[in-house]
Each structure stands twice: as structure tokens, then as C-alpha cells.
Length: 178
Image (cartoon, rainbow, N blue to C red; front, side, top):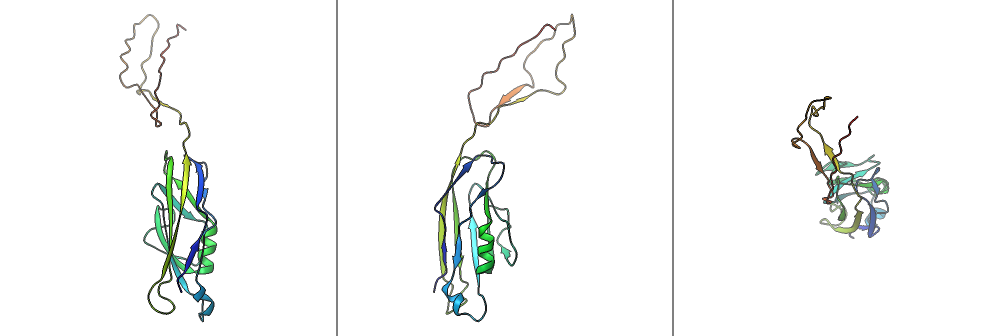
């Protein structure tokens, strides 16, 4: 019989979160494990396009095709070890990413019982809401200094203002006679 994987269909979070977004709720199973003399191993492959995935508990797992904390990787282990790991699954979106990412999970029984490999898969949508990032002002080093009774010509060279959100910016320059 084929293995199974099930879990939530949707997750959400904000751009640039202070902590990773939990993707807990996925479980794998294989009815053939009940009839085997010893627990069988399954291989689970995880992937996202715009971030990284992490398993909090990796005890009893073997990684292949990537590493914990990457955008995609595969792990092999018993059903119990895999489900323990999946309970602590989290997603960290790429810096400044907002929009929809898709989490993909595939499970393979490695042909442990009765022939060739059988598989199952599931996916979930991860909606990442945009946040307004602060603009950045870059000042040349060293910054021009004004000295009393000395004219300073300001040509804007080396100064720039940017906003990762591509917002229209208004820059105001003020001088003080202090």
C-alpha cells in the first residue's frame, strides 16, 4: 500500500517575521508499517520557492538532497521520527518576500513492503502579507561639514535615499543656522 501525507491547506504570516512561521500539522503514515517486523523507513521531501524550511527535532533522521534550514531537502526515518520532526516544521520567508509561496511535501515508501516505491504528496499555500519597510538614507563618509562663515556647496553627491518597497519618496533638506 502507498504511504500517505496529510496536513493543512493554508498558512499565513508577514514579510520579514521576527520568528519563523509554524507549518505544523503535517503527518505521514503507511499502513504497511503495522505489518512489518520492524518500523519501516520513509523518505519525505520538503520544498518552498521563496524561503527556507526547518525541522526543530531531527533525531533519528538522515538528510539527503539538501540540509535543514534550506529551501528544499529530503529526510529519511521511521514514521514516528518523521512525524515528530514535522510537528516542529517552520518556514522563514526570504527577506522582503511577500505574496504566495507554495509548500510541497512528498513521501516515498522506498519499496519497503511488496515491490517498487509508492508515493503520496500534498501542498499548502503560504500567504505572506507585505509590511511597510522604512526608507534608507545613505550619507557619504565623511559627511560634508559646515564651518561658520564658510560657504559650503551641496551638490547631492554621495547622498541617496532608497526604499525596498519602491514607494514614491519625498526628500526634504533643511539647514539650520545654529
